[in-house]
Length: 445
Image (tube, rainbow, N blue to C red; front, side, top):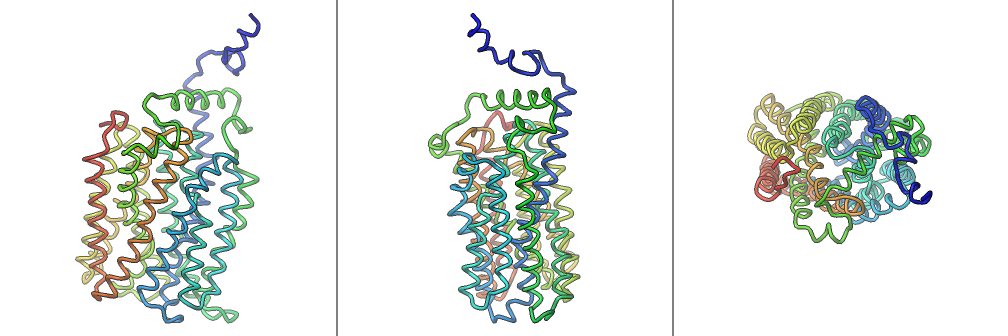
């Protein structure tokens, strides 16, 4: 009889099997949000800046090294090939060895790779280091998305993903002016070009942040000392119930055999094409509008990301409030398509083009947090780790395809607008895929 009594999990829990009050649950998630999200946002801001600062370096780097627009487009995009090849192994490794070790390793190595860009002299060196940067950063974003599933159930995840993914926008807001300032004031200091200083100065904080991960980041609620026992129990109880929801795939083999995984992957590819465009080409687009000062280019480049931050948070919060996911993502993709296409059409009218680019950024960025609620409806366990990595790694190949296509089309046609129209079509394609092929009652459909 004693053995049977010990089988009741309630007897070993802080509540003794009693129901946890809503206040305790609310307080638990409030603590988890404030403890984790700002730090994770900070890490991703560093990752994003080190990933896309090549867009600002381009303003002087191409002239110094005699690189063509096509060379730049290929080098900017090849990052995602390394990212693609190593992301799934990285995410599966995270599940085995834990988030702290994985995220610390990733952060330190990408910082070192970014700093090494100061040694680039030839196109091949440029390609190799961008590829290596992708290898080292592989697994960070899907790793964080997976890590958040250890803390927040699916009903709370769109808003939480939205808060985390404000890092895209925050990086654009702070990264642009900082990069422009470095480019303006650090030219030929100690014999280094301004773009070399850009890579060096922005790589060092990532190395230091990687060390901080080991000291600050808890693995799961069960070991979070800053949560009271009842608060830990509240989170773990909800997560157990959430992961036991019928209809979810728990193994990677099951996930790979599910057509919805590949529809989500194709959808994400289309969405990411716009994100890569605003990340790598916004400085060039703004210069195309007639702005010459690097600092002013950086300041103006922040505008689309400020608007995108607001749209991202609002869309994620409204999606959680209504419980609807599909159309929140589809509408955002349509807005992205319209904004990016109009940017191409209005390049001769600077003010209108910047407004259109801002609209496009709002659509692109607000699609991300809601999108990641789609695969969460049918993936859990190892399937979530592998499935999220597959979607992100294959989808992020758009980060290679879009910059290269834009660079190639501009080199071929002489028109930046042709590449923007191409990306606009891809964004519209994301909306079509969602509306036609992604249907599930758990997504509000």
